[in-house]
Image 1 (cartoon, helix red, strand yellow):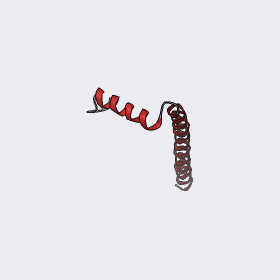
Image 2: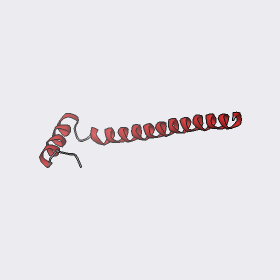
Image 3: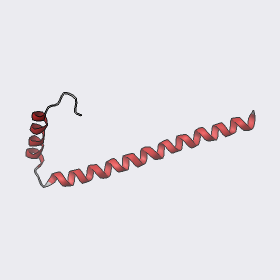
Image 4: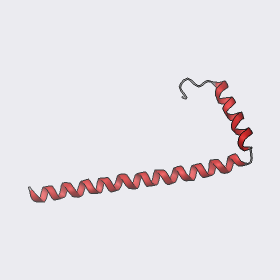
Length: 66
């Protein structure tokens, strides 16, 4: 799943994160990350839809010309 990262490396990473941020801040940080990720996904989908719409409009114009 994580490539060459083993169990001990993950455990050490979790301990360091807990020491740096504390256990009270982690849930709030996770919530904020989730909100930002959802916002990013929505924006990404909107951009993709806009590109599809532009391409479809160009195809429609070419069909009318030719």
